[in-house]
Each structure stands twice: as C-alpha cells, then as structure tokens.
Image 1 (cartoon, protein in one colour):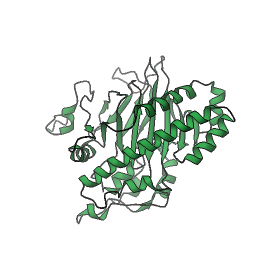
Image 2 (cartoon, protein in one colour):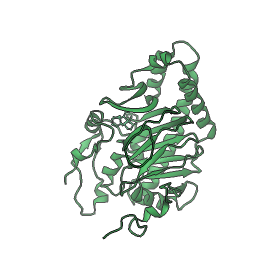
Image 3 (cartoon, helix red, strand yellow):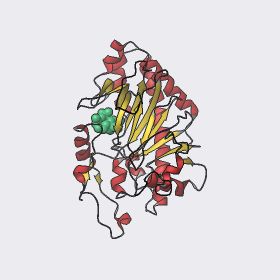
Image 4 (tube, helix red, strand yellow):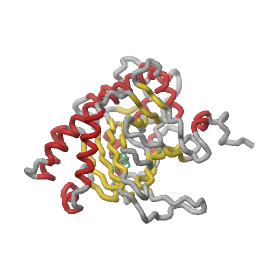
Length: 333
Ligand code: GA4
C-alpha cells in the first residue's frame, strides 16, 4: 500500500503541519541571487509562492487598500452603480456568468488607464472619489506589473529561455489583456455548513479555481482565508501577510511551459469575524497571442496542448464554471 501523505513521497508535504497549515510557503526573497532557482522550484512543486523584498512601495499598497475599503463602505445602492461586473465593474456574491456564488463583493477592472478613468468617472460623476481611486489603482498596477515582470524574467532565466522577456513582454505589451480585482470578503457570522461529516464549518468566499492568465499577484490584509490545493488534492491554509505578495502560476503559463509549471487551484474561505480585503493583478497576454508550449522547453517532448489564442481561451473561460478544468478542452492526451 502506498501511503500518499508521507513526506518522502510528496516532498512539499514536509511544509505542512498536522492541521494542514502550510507553515512553510515557498518564500522568495527577490533581493537574493538564489531567488531564480527557488522560483523555478516553487513553480514546479506548488505553482505558488510568497515574495518579500518585492520593491513595491508600501505607500502604494496602503493607499489602494484604503481606497478599496472606502469604496466597499459605500451604500450598496452607490456601489451597484458600478455594476454589473461583467465584463468589468462591481459584483456582489455572483461570480462569472454561470451561476457561481461566493461570500464576496468586488470591483473588477482592466488595467488600461484610459478604461479605468472612463469607468470610474461614469460611476462617481464629478465627485473627487474617482481621482483618488484612479491614482491609487494606476500607481499600484504599474509597480506590481514591474515586479511581476521581474519574476517572469527570473523564471525565464531559471528555465534557460532566451530572450528573458519571453513571458514579461506579454504583460508589457500595450494590448496586454490584464485585469485588476479588488475583493472584499465581509465577516460572516452565520456560517453555512458546506461538505459533511468532517465537522468543519466553512463559507466559501471565492470557490476553487485556477487563474486563466499567465501570472497572478495577490496582496491581502492580515485576515486569513486563502487556501491552495496541493498535488494530492488536499487543501492547506496560507497564513496571511500584509507586507508580502503571493504569486500564482496561471493556466497560460502552465501551457507555455508544457506543464513544467502547474497552475495552482485555490479558494478563499470567509472569516466569521474579520473582513478580508485583497487586491489581485492578473497578468494576461494580448488577445491575439498564440498560447502554446515554448519550443525550447520541449526538448523532443510532444506538446500536451493544442495551440489556441488567448482570445479563444478567454471566450471559453467566461463560459465556464469557476471550478472547471478549463484546459481540459485543449489537452492532446
Ligand atoms: C478567475 C480569475 C479572475 O478573478 C477572473 C475570474 C472571472 C470573473 O470573476 O469573471 C471568472 C474566473 C476568473 C474563471 C471562470 C469564470 C470567469 C469567473 C468565472 C466563473 C477575473 C478571470 O479572469 O477568471
């Protein structure tokens, strides 16, 4: 009999304690030269890691968080003026177009500054609110994009891919289809019961899913809730850290690396007492970009995927449920 949970069979389980609290999230210090190899290892083992010494000014982070808190404290009727969430705007409990629900409200925007200006002016009219929120979003997005590009270049170096901007150029492209999301998970005193038999009472804030883009950069306040799924399917909680960023490998990067890196399944569980506020940058390619394994990574191997454009993939993403395996449709075997 194979005992799957033994650390020697799954090296990443060494990082978990008995309560499945991942106390040793792969930690990448971007100021250290070792970060390149450590990032590659973290992407192979988890598709997920935490970054410190990230270079994003704390002022930018605090400013956007406080703007987000201010926005979410508006009366519902005001926030709803920014709806519906699809393709971009304010959403409450409903996620996507296929009936997924979560204990969350959010603002979903593209990262294009002109779009942000237009959208915010249409929500707030002539008041001074849009200027503050717009400025906070724009400075945050630029700094986080820069960090995401640095990480993607370290990945390329670590994988010995040239040129090193092979991934990062997709985020820097004027046509890059990147998204920013502000999430508010209100405290949930009346915990609904999900699942059965294990005595765990949970309310799903944001249901399990992988991110379709190349890379996601998440920052949250100090409220817990984020969980990631390990390769054996078990869920582990990620201790929050408001001074760090958490990086997710997205589906598109999984394809471009022909599964050397795997996108990470994750979800958010609501907290009964404290609000959780997160801000996520999803770095995506231009719509016309072909997503396929990079030939230099194939080394004689066959591609696991049929080629597709980001536009085609995105269309199927938005017609899917949150938990679906969206890459299944493009797998060759
Ligand atoms: C998950 C990652 C991003 O938050 C997002 C989400 C999108 C949405 O909220 O509209 C989706 C989800 C996400 C994947 C499946 C579809 C689309 C909700 C949903 C049910 C903005 C994205 O790009 O894909």
